[in-house]
Length: 400
Image (cartoon, rainbow, N blue to C red; front, side, top):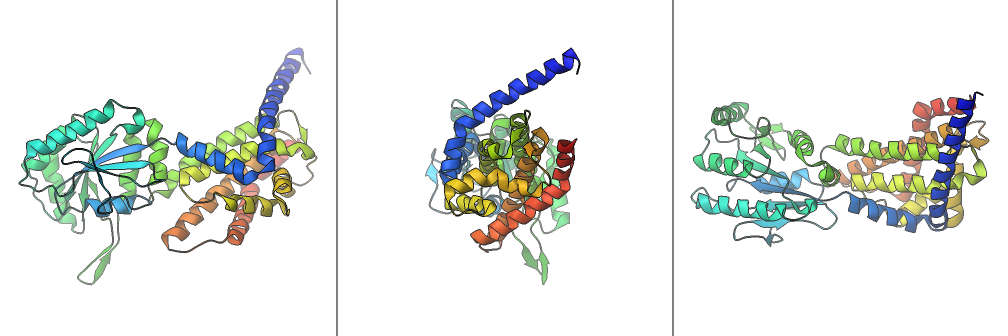
């Protein structure tokens, strides 16, 4: 090896040694009580998500509450739970869902327009004097597509809101394309300062003349909102929404990629399989990060059962120390864990957990429960598939 090559190798070894020492500081905690370690990581990751705040406006009867409760993974617009912010504005939030909705319930067309605008502006400006998590970040202005008319009230409120925050116009109750198009044409003619064209939505399926029209437009609303939100609160919104699963997957994959890189750094100087426990804090943090983004309940004792099942061990401590060894069972002929193997088993586990979280959300949406045994079986199968899909390439690299 050349002098330069030896220098690079020594540098990689030094980086790996630092990464191992850092991981070792957390290893005993993670191995001794995986559930407690996971829960601590989960709570930390949830705090790091931030908090998104959306102001929703529109006249009475346009279906704001139905829209809100259809977009988010928990009902945020239940009657009687709003907290007054001003005389007209109320805020709605639910514990464990990192989004707050600011709304003006029951705005009638005849109500004093100036009073409504004044209260909106006050709410937004007050929020902007506080930390980012408390800002009003975006406004959804809702209009029913069942009418093709655009009122002066709508125009003036949208313009006033756009002076303070980005505004999306959401057309609700879209069951007639001709009516929706007529309303869009009227909006376009006003050249309103909005972000993109109006979004056509139907929050819940509707039966018209014996024909069922499925809900639609919610994913597009979520994805456009996500693009506009500040970077610091996008993961909070991703957690809170319940319709664009691919958005959750996108953020979760970033968490897995980071964990894979960290695991690879630990394995840059090959370590014996018996020392594979040093990867556990990285992998547990990854599982917690993915779970936080999805907003699913895999905390408390359920994660312990998963780890115990993966390691096929009766005790929590032994299960924790056996996690990486259990993951290595799908890697043939491995005696030492190098960067490629450490990355491979970590990324495959992360990919499997993403699949499990997706399954949990789908079961939740259909009202089905998933037992711990089913979760373990699903995770094991998904892990094996993930290794076969991508991990084999890392395995070949490790042999080379």
